[in-house]
Amino acid sequence: MKWNRKSFRNNRKPQRKYNEERQLQGLKVEVRNNDVTKALRVLKKRMQNEGIFNELRERTFFRKKSEKRRLAKSAGRRRWLKRVEKMKEVRGY
Image (tube, rainbow, N blue to C red):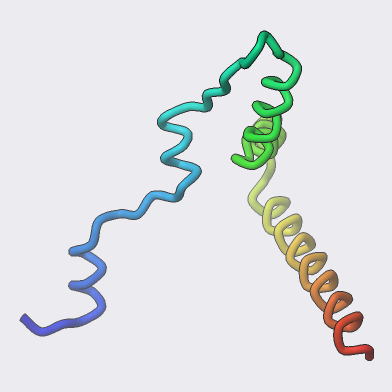
């Protein structure tokens, strides 16, 4: 069989991200020594890392595709400017 990109793409398994696998399992937090406040902090931190809060915020109301594109573009610009500022600090110019 001759190797080409198309046959390679069709033969591989679809890859799942770490977050998607985690969502299938669910989040679990142990409460130790009846310290519920600490368990809530741990749960909140895990939810923040998984991106659950961002997803909830995105799903609260409908956004048009053009608005999503505009917001993604502005977010990319912010990331780029932040990287440029960091490089200015490192290089000194």
